[in-house]
Length: 420
Image (cartoon, rainbow, N blue to C red; front, top):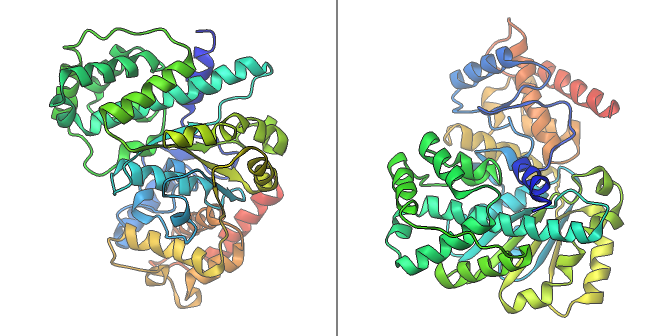
C-alpha cells in the first residue's frame, strides 16, 4: 500500500523521540550523559561495588527502561484508569504519562486479573492530506494489534500450539495480513536471534521484558509450528483489518476487552505547541468512544496537560459514555519515593535510600535532590543519574556521594535547561 513505508517508520520508531540533548542512551542499560562508554563502565563498576545490580536512573524515558516494571511507583490516580472504560490522563512533559501507559500495558500483558488486551498506539506522523492521515491512523492501529498478537503468541507458545487448528489458523491469517512485514521475515529473525526483539523493538521495547520470557526452545517450537500452516494474506482496508483482529482477540483468545493505549500526541513539531493540531490526531478516536464501548474497546489517552481543556469540551460535546479523566501531579514526598523505589529495586531491597551510599553532608539525599530540581520525574531521574556520574568522574572520590557531587549535577542540569 502507498503508506506502508510511512507507517513502518512510525512503528520502527517504537517510542516517541525525546529532544533532551543531555542524555545519550545505550542498549545495555544506560544514559551516558555528556560522557561516554568509559565513564559508563566506571559507573557500573562503582554501583556494583556499592550493592547495585544495575543503574536504576539510566533511562529518563519510562518507555525505554527495561527495568521499569520493578519500580513503578504507586500513584493514587493510576487506579482510576486501569478498569473497564475509556480514560484520559493529563500531565506536563516528563511527569509520568508514558510511565502510566507502560504500567497499564505491563499489567495487561502479565495477566494480573484485567483480562484486557493492550494495544500501544503511538500517534503517527501527521500528513497534509486528511484522507491519507486517516488511512495511516487505521494502519498504525491495525498493525499495532498484529504486533501485540504476535508478542502474545511468543509468550504463550505452548498454549497456542495446543489450540484448535481452526483457531490457530484464523489467528495467523489475521495477524499475517496486518503485520508491517512478511510473516517469514519475523519467523527468520525469531529463529536466528532466539528472543523477542524482532517483535518488540519495532513496536514497544518494554514488551520484551515481561516475566516468564520465552526460552529459545519455546520460540523455535513456535516458529516451526507456524511454518506448518499455509497462511494466506488477505487484502482488506486497514479499518477492516482492525475489525477482523478485534474479533480474533475476543473470540479466539477470549479476551473480555481491548485497551488502546494512545501516546505520543506531542511527539511532532506540528503538534508539540499546537493543541488544536494535537487534538486533531485523536479526534477520530474520541468520536468512536461510544460505539467502541459497546464492544468493550476502550481508548486510554496519555496526553499533555495543555490539551486537557479542549478534550474536556469535546468529550461533553460528543459522548454519552463516561470517560475517566485524571491529572498526574507530584509533590515532594512522591518524587522522593520515586528515587527510593528505584534504589530499593536495584539493590534487591538492601537499601531503601541513597543515604546508604552518601556522606553526612548529603543526608536525606532524596529531599536535597528534589528541592534542587523541583520539577518532574524525568528531571529527577536525569539529575540523580548525573549525581552518580559526577561522583565517578573524580578519580580521588571515595565510596560515598557528596554534596559537591549534587551541586555539580544541578549545575549541569540547569545549564542544559538554559540552553534549550
